[in-house]
Structure formats: structure tokens, C-alpha cells
Amino acid sequence: HDQEEAMTMAHRLAVMTEGQIVQCGTPQDVYAFPNSRFVAGFIGSTNLLTGTIVVDEPDHVAIECAELTRPLYVSHGVSEPLGMEVHVSIRPERLVVYNWAHGMVSHMAWMGSYALYHVRLDSGKIVEASVPSLQLAQIDAPGIDEEIFVSWDADSATVLAS
Image (cartoon, rainbow, N blue to C red):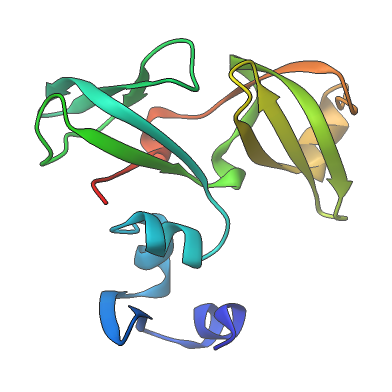
């Protein structure tokens, strides 16, 4: 079915794969809090990182990812145990072209109300950032092959066990 239509018209939606419902909820909840890599990738665009939980506290976790130069801080606890490999979903609109992970702009598409940047991190991982036109007007908008930094708020990451 048409995802955009479902997201705009439904009060509740169900995501199915292989004849099984894998997540059900409001469009906002399913988008913001996917329960698996499949749902995160199926509903909208996402940046997926894989890593290991190295700090596990009730109010935060830190995840060491090979694609990043330092542990990823997430501002909420998780039910997965210390040392478990997990996946982290960060939506493109939650990335800020700024100062956390170093990279190079590999592609930029002007979409009118926003620009879609593909940023190649030093590890080679490509992440997407959707930058609102208003923000671009306030900064010196980076172009192709320019060095930049990307960051995101600690509450922007969703930890996924599967």
C-alpha cells in the first residue's frame, strides 16, 4: 500500500511482513518508535547503525559503533543487556549538519523546503540528513565534497534489538 496515504489518513496502522503483523500503532508512534530494523526501514527513511551496548543505565545507554569515532549516547534506557549487539535508527530529519561525526558531503539534492544531504563519514558509512531551507539560509550551506560534521540529539536515536 501507499505509505504516505496510510500515514496521513490512518488513525492506526499495522506493518506486516510475510503475513505477520510486526508492529501496530498510531502512524506517529510507528514512525518515531519502530520496534525493529524492518519497521524502521519500511516506514520512511532512516540511518541504521550497528553497535554494542557498552554503558547500560536506567536513564541512558552508550553504544559503540564501528562507523563512529566515539560511543553513541542515547538518552533513555533499554531492555537489552550490556554487551548485546543492537541497531540504532536515526531519522534523516533528526540529523544536524554540525559538529559530532566528521564526514564529507557526497550528494546533495535541493527539494524546495529542504535539502537532502548524503554524508560519507570517515568510516565510509553514508548517512542522510534532511536540512530545512530555513536552516540553510542561516548557515553557509555546504556543497559537494565539502568537509562537514553531523550531530543529533541524544533523544533522536531509537535502539532496536532486531
